[in-house]
Length: 71
Image 1 (cartoon, rainbow, N blue to C red):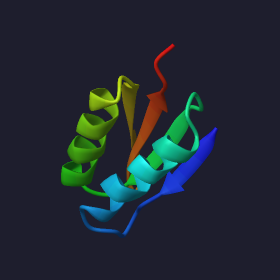
Image 2 (cartoon, helix red, strand yellow):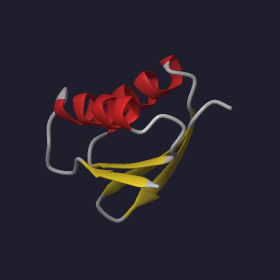
Image 3 (cartoon, rainbow, N blue to C red):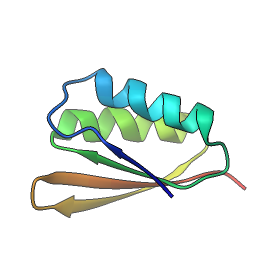
Image 4 (cartoon, rainbow, N blue to C red):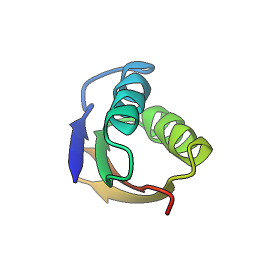
């Protein structure tokens, strides 16, 4: 699993980093850490547009998005 820690970064940086990780790690689950609801929503939309399933967990300092690649 690849972890992208985008806490403290404003959009579009979390989306850009997630896109780069998706492109570099096809077929690998990703965990993306973000602070804001805007970043959560934008990263979720990107992942869904690429066919990934998204599970969102609330964590102490934001959100953990678990992205599972399409089979």
